[in-house]
Image 1 (cartoon, rainbow, N blue to C red):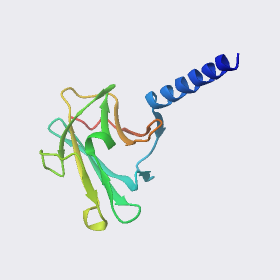
Image 2 (image 1 turned 90 degrees about the vertical axis):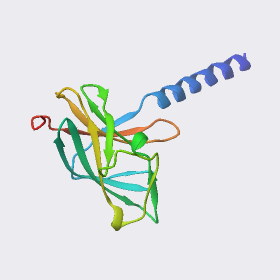
Image 3 (image 1 turned 135 degrees about the vertical axis):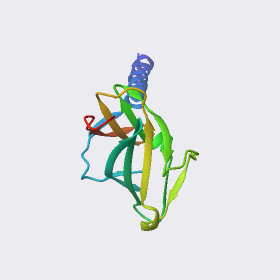
Image 4 (image 1 turned 30 degrees about the horizontal axis):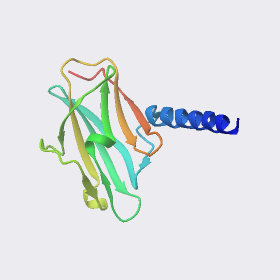
Length: 147
């Protein structure tokens, strides 16, 4: 009997952890408030577009010493429910998987995402990757200015 109860409790805990890992927690943010993820403080400075490319300017500072980010895993642009392709980072089309940020000298980062059709719903996501479920900070962008 005790063994059966322990198995049931174990299954319940396993299901809870599985759902916690699979379902990210989404938090709406605005352009004013900074977001803290993985030893970094990130703030949206500006947004814009050119030739079917959406551009987001970010101020990325380390909370202490230095910090690293992966533009593929830590940021995403979602247009009408689909992730857009990362086009360039600081006007460079060759994008590494990790970048180190040490302070004010390299704090401004410009991320470009490419779209084919003009989106009606556009969200920039800052993803705080955690062991038990990611936190996704989501900024709703205006789409009326897009080409």
